[in-house]
Length: 327
Ligand SMILES: [Zn+2]
Image (cartoon, rainbow, N blue to C red; front, top):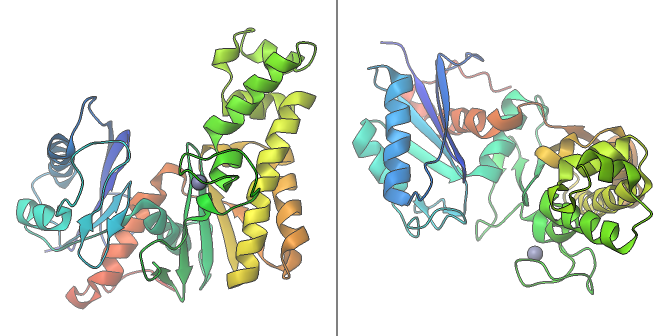
């Protein structure tokens, strides 16, 4: 019987499942579906199991790797909670998947799993150490050190989103001030742009045109596009976000000296000016300067799913998923 790894990604708004033969870089089957509105942990799990059965098409997986969009107690293999879907508190997800799908399963949080995915199959291939960041609605991340996920003693390693950039800065959702997430995430940079558009009615002409004059329609994508077109107000906002993230990256580099930094998430697609400002801010602070490459992520939305494959391969190597492509 052919070995099959089942990879599952429990996102806040999307669920995805994929099946791959170990060592292959192409899904045998993969499906993505929106999480039904009003979901709780039980319905979210049932939805995922249906997706899994669909991609398995009657086959039984050899091993299951899982990315969960929220904090995970890795040692206990339990979900701590989801920020988006109620009922996940203390949920024994690994046990439930193992009994439903009759195969060994391993779970971890999405930042860690996506970091492993980029290291093994994406922009960090061949790197023994890597810092991965995702910048979208929030700012998350994960470390791969010695080709393995580094979770930290409390499972909180990689929480770069709540690194302090401005001690007296604006209040973050976590209650602290001046966090990276508060300064660099998509929703907050969009809000900053809306505030400046209101305060400066004669500025931001291109940004206003992009949203048809409807300030509520200003989102991070519109800010990035207007900034690339040379809109000064949009660029002021985007540059501040890039610099906040770059400062965090430079500080993280000084602490851990990774071989590479990989940045993904929607905001990372903000364009060349954004990347130049991000790299300049990081390099100005990092002792390694330009020697550590800061690169865009390569796997996009599939990073957690590919990372789940790598997680299962690493964890269940004993059951001979040995044709793994790990370097
Ligand atoms: Zn915070």
